[in-house]
Length: 452
Image (cartoon, rainbow, N blue to C red; front, side, top):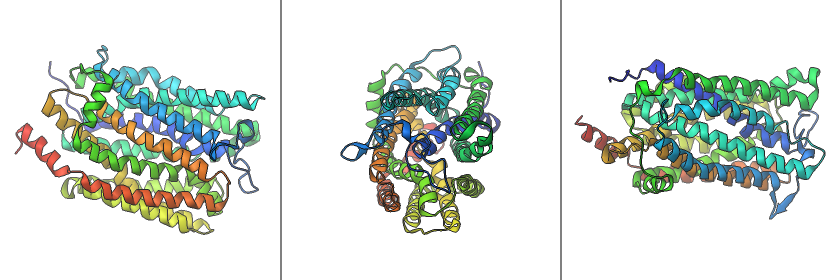
């Protein structure tokens, strides 16, 4: 039976799901550390509002419990990626290999996010520590179950080079939209504070945002009939054998080297962003959304430029430019002083690398997955994206341990030090990406397809 053509409208419907999981991820990544550690001040009274409920002091070599919990969660998340990817690649569900996973897990994923800010509130610190750990592990498991099949569809719906760049552009837009909305959490909590109190306002704000995210995740799960567009043959390769095959791909490894380092640097910066603005620049936390919205709006304005330039000058050159752009942002943060204008300087400068690195890396993975499919006849798109997330989540886990360890003192200098570390690692990642051979990959795809 003739499959329906893949259109840009379909790709936009697909991209709505990215907004949902990005919003949930942003809530946890941007605000868990902020509300569960740190100390309040007159300007930002909600900082560390839940800190008294969990262990705060370092327990091993200046490593805090919260940092270890976050790191273990990301490592667990990374390990489950290839398992879920292998399951999805081999799936033979009537509704397809990817969509059934997404539809099933959307609601539990949203509920567990609400639970993270609600349930670890007993009178026992030890019990709260255990609850927080269990909830965070479950959160990352549910995120993997949704995101791994979702990411596999990037390559499968990207049936042409144009569609691969387009879908990467659309999901980049919805990703940063979700991340940006997540920065509104203090604003929403502030509006609700009079009705439910300080702690209740944070929990209710998380619940409202999680509900919106859940609806967004259900949109592609309901409206995209996978079998109408794709006829992918289930893979017969078991999960870890498939993972090993993926990492045996030389070009994929070269991509991953820099990707891990980039996400280490970016996670350091994202985790510390609220602290940089409140502790270094002296800005109220309610300005975080305004600054993020500014950065996002400027970045989105550059999407058409990135979309048009990528096929002409190459994704590789643009990604290296993005690396150095972020390195500049980290350096500015390290050197910043007091004043709201510093926040706007960072927002403006970060918009350029955000546009580039928000779109093009996943397009590179889709290229490598497409070449592998053409050369081997086996579609393991899920595993290629899972292998990428497996690698960069290890970098994220390390970043969370490093951030919470460096900033255990809570001094401005400790937060400044994390920006310096991010700068050095991002420059290193840029240098490593020179090893990736994009021209060979695209040339080989055209050759096999008979387009040359």
